[in-house]
Length: 559
View (cartoon, rainbow, N blue to C red):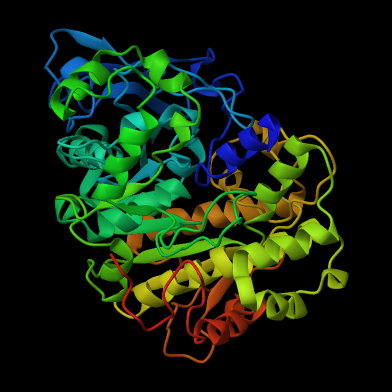
């Protein structure tokens, strides 16, 4: 295997990502006419943000103490109160990360547990305003300050975007390390607790908090829904392209990447074993767990980040812990989660992004022969049946055939299972983002047809000049409608209001549960299961031993 292909696999196996405007100048830090200071008292001290004609912005507010030194790989601790007024007009530091092919962002700063607050100005609400807390995706790169929330704030929300520990700092595990594999989740819960204590200072309603996230961030929300530590911290949830009930066939994320029965979740032991293996070359092994941990905590951030693949090894969450006592998928299927309003969905062509990334990085076309080999790797003795259902001649290219197979088998199957689990017990609104001409805002050259790709919907809700400058008038209308739906859901628990397309609840008892298709000038119901051939995958799942990465439906997963 070439070094280039190995690097691609490492990126693709790093879990799904989501970073907006990582390379663009920070629009919120640019000089704004008629700006003035705005001071608010939080529970740890005064913060001075920036009031513009249209918004008030508070940036880089600490919600937990620095996770440095002995506190590296420890539960988040309280912020030490400060005297005077803390400047909150500029972004705080990103958590440790290295630049990737899709995000030119890097940081070596561990004192990074900060958040941003965006509100509309001047404040006109006569009562506390609903709060939306955004958990960004990826798990190895990104940060809350990369998301411009002004459009959502314009709809009458207080929007909080959060940093949390990433990669080896957020998902690390080791023998004897309390909290192994849960530090990112603990950070997010600490941020939500900060919101509960401080929302009122910004005009927000601590009793009406929506937590929203995409990809890895949405997977985290699946965990929070089942976590006893998160009870009462939020009252609605939006899960975009969440992987909480997904599994992964072999090779789905690149040649040589193994199958996983649970895409996001690992046992605590698996996480600890990975920690031992991945840090074995750092000079801390062979000392016993306690001394090894002291050694690892003393290493420079840069050394941890430059060990091959280490930044991608811990983008999972450990269950069997105090944060996640049981496998979240099992808890969700059993209905062990709060009966709160939920919005859940995915993009129509989720996996085209990953296939397109590999195509661009490796630089050679994906052939019909590779397609058949990929099917054999992923599906074993069922490969011929999958090939007959998805014959390569029916697609513009073998690459798009493979992308469709994995979209349907992995993403759509998991997304639908999650909607069914939610809809059996709570008010649930399902959607599919279906704009197949969504602008590509990630730096991928070439002419690959990405379609309605993974994370392609994010610039339709958050400000992103790189994408939105390419919007057609129909896409502008779609963006406005989607943002209105999100905001009204955060306000009331339903995306429906006069003037917006009707969006019925997802009812699993119906022959065709309602899924809202979101496309330019084409918003309305779609038969999601039929579109993604889920009956075919269900029939295969009834075969003993299929899929290779997960027990058949109806059988208890091994945890």
